Length: 135
Length: 285
Image 1 (tube, rainbow over the protein chains, first blue to last red):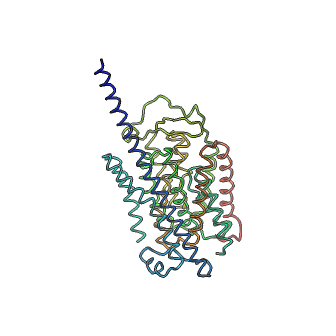
Image 2 (cartoon, each protein chain N blue to C red):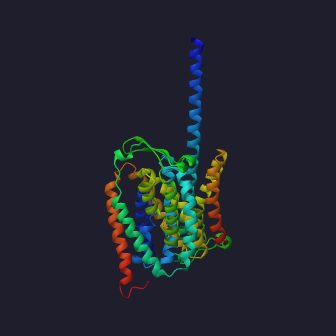
Image 3 (cartoon, helix red, strand yellow):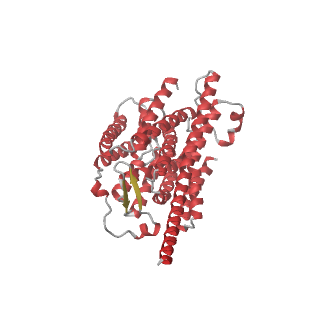
């Protein structure tokens, strides 16, 4: 009788451990996505605010310009022109969802969920297609 | 752009972020008419700027909804396949289309959204899990899920219905997104809620999660065309981000039906204004 009870307790413990592991795993992915999305916006806003500080120091009105393509961005960044940092902040924001999709891809691959790996890969490929159009 | 105009834009973006995070829309549907009508920004620049705002809204609000387990990540991934394909097609078409048609399409779409939002209702009884078979695709993709509602502290299980139809409507939503620079949430939320029977709050959170990716696909294309004005975009990002911070906090516990009605009214006014602008003589488009 005691052994049966001990056995039952062992099984219960195993189940609760397993459940905790599953919850932690789900929590993990949710948390990671939360931090990536949140972090992307916060970093973008920080860079943009720095851009506005540069505007204030330059004493000139906020520049009206088109978007600077990524490959032409190095020079304005090194010379600390406001347009450069404002463009960088915008780019960081646009790239945030791309990073999120990539992380989803990794997490589905780790779960060995083939259907969702395929779907996420298609979404990622679509983003890359429009990214190629950007470059 | 004068400082005053930029500050007005930031305030408008704040309101768009506040409303957008609550309704699961990107907020572009408010920003584009505001920029073109009140600030006389060129519509293509307005669309590009709005797409940036949509991403800020999605990343800011969706992060919170994901953390609070309102978002259905699998459903989002499934529908994103459709929305990103639609968005690329939409952005490519949008760049070659005369502005006149963009106004017409935008006016019609806004008015459609207004009527849909006014019609949507959701009671606790409707939210309860009802017996029935899952669609084969829903079962295969494990789309059905649960969510926790803070308003009444209840956990609700739901079944996703008509996945194929939802996929098709999402492709159309993506097309509009690329074409008009909106998140397409006003199409996705009704599609998920009415068509696929996803509870309202889960639909809002899932839509909010998806619109960032959809908008990113078309934002790249607009950015490459030099249509994103960094100064305008920066103001919109900062405004929207502050708005979503307040929106997700303030409205987590709120009742949605009243606010939804006001929103529908607001959309109806905007849609009418956009269409009316076409017939006003002397207004440059």
